Length: 269
Ligand code: GLY
Image (tube, rainbow, N blue to C red; front, side, top):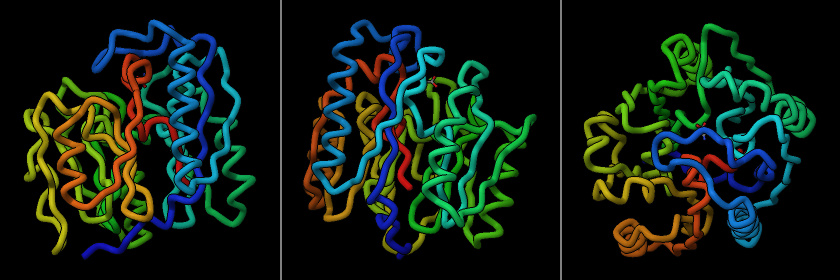
């Protein structure tokens, strides 16, 4: 069975919702946020749920020049002593990275910073980790040059990388899947199949969820068999409960409206 990676779940960065959030990119799950106060309330509840479940949360200030800056997951990925700073796949989001890079460089002294350069591009939301096995979404935000840079890093670290082609109706790999534990992948029918992930290590499985619960497939697994999931996805919740998880449910309505999922709003380091 894959090694448990829940050890990297003790600290997280989140970023407040920008005054310009109403203009956030929205093309997949949502047609744009409509209520910034509710969005902020939901985001505060999200950060509180992380803290209440043992995560030390640092909240970075929003930047009103970047409507999508709350979605920090896309801007940096911490892997085994390395901080990967990708070139975000949407031009409007490229200026979000510096405060996140500065924070991580300061907190993680001794980690190697790996800065991607164009034409490579990648959103952190296209990276999924199952123990020591990695998956990357080839999407409108992540190109082959970006995938090659990630593969070079993972080869160096001795980890395997598999490519998952993201269907046109989805933004990122993590928009439609997650690993609530280091031996389970959740994925939606109509978007992905068990074969999308190839043969998994012994003891690991892909659990397919109904197409209409695609948004619910994005979860955050925490130590102690806890999992945070979005409110309103009963099959996902029932299956995780049957697997022995304690489910913590959060209303993500105004985050979803900007195509954001639970994992989009944090970087675990
Ligand atoms: N609204 C999130 C994104 O499109 O990157």
